Length: 148
Image 1 (cartoon, rainbow, N blue to C red):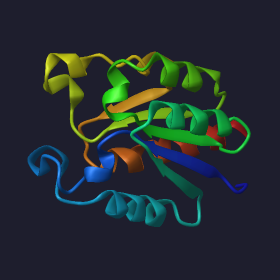
Image 2 (image 1 turned 45 degrees about the horizontal axis):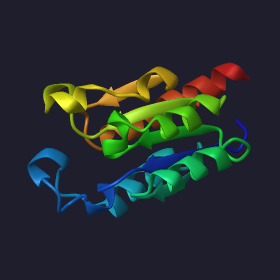
Image 3 (image 1 turned 90 degrees about the horizontal axis):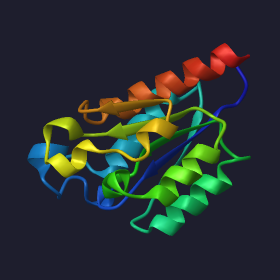
């Protein structure tokens, strides 16, 4: 398989993993998550990690991914529920895109049940903790393999 690059984007407050609501998000940090993903895909793909609380920075990173990534895993955090700018940037991309949430957004507050990015992503994975990112990586790699 060719050298595959997966862009992993985490939105606002995900840099606070391990501190923010550990009963919901766990005690591990964003660095722990990034290490887990890197180890999991080692030898199959490389990951580029990006985290920002700024909507425009996430949009710019998605735009940059147009020619620089083979797939995107995105946890847009709160932007999931209302950022049409991120939605539009995802829609432009013609690569596999998987929306991930650590918690099950469908079993939380009602405002979290709505995802404005869901319909422009290939799949949504929610409620599997950090494992959801690994599941997303597998799905992207499978989709890329089937394109060849």
